[in-house]
Amino acid sequence: MKINIYIIAKKSNDTYDKLINDFIKMSSKFANISIHYLFNNEISKAQNINEFEAQKVYTKVYTPYLKGFNIALDVLGKQVDTFAFSKLLEDKNEVNFFIGGAYGFQREFLDLCDHTISLSNLTFAHKIATLVLGEQIFRSLSILNNHPYHK
Image (cartoon, rainbow, N blue to C red; front, top):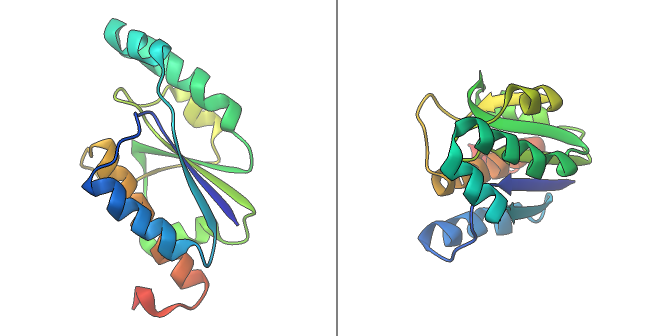
């Protein structure tokens, strides 16, 4: 299984990255996971204009990566428990997670995805959302592969 995490952010090396990479490493026996940091001048300019322009550029940047099974993470998405989350990964060859930019997603992008879920009613910084997502991916892969981590 291939899992891609796409995020509108600049790559950095901080404490969060170490923790995120720990979950990716632990998951590697079950899936190949990659994080793709996407940030460019066009995104930066659009975010300085307004929410609508920023969302439009996020859609433009993310759309080429819509292949396989696509899940957008959005505060307005459906909240799922860990078992329902693991079912989203079950029997998939490629799963792509899209973390919204500072202004979230356009409805048009969400409609292109197979599912839209929320990690919480709370709003998280990108690094925290990625860390929570990484842990839930590992937990879900553990469930699907009868690994004792979930217990």
